Image (tube, rainbow, N blue to C red; front, top):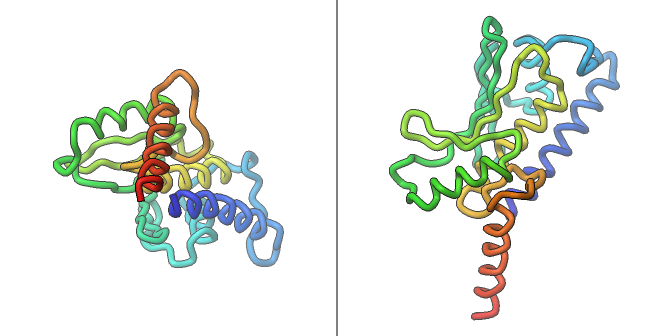
Length: 185
């Protein structure tokens, strides 16, 4: 839960950082989220505002948030981008957890998805590159990090839960199990 709260704080901090950087015309040119198309150069500038220790090159960046490492990958020719966060090796996950991931993809993962590639479970935010706004990037980054951090507990990207799925009930059970453990002590 501590990382979940920190991820929400990260989203707010990133948003404020980007807004503040845009207000200082000498430090960086103002970027209107919908006036310019997103490309690798603009995305690089935005990611550097979020993480001054950004690693990588145009089209492939790595960012660190506490113990969580996120990658941002783009393909300008295909007009695609993705934020991906490795979570755990599939061989280390039980079948009931895989079922829970699929339930979360329906109602609590929101703009990110839990997915499997190369034997690893990832959280992934995928979007067309050219129409990606600053706010969508920040939200997608925060959701991917939060989904990775909440793996094994709430399986949530942090924003909300859509009704009609199973996550609300599963999160209620998780909440109650914490209270029961506390009362047993």
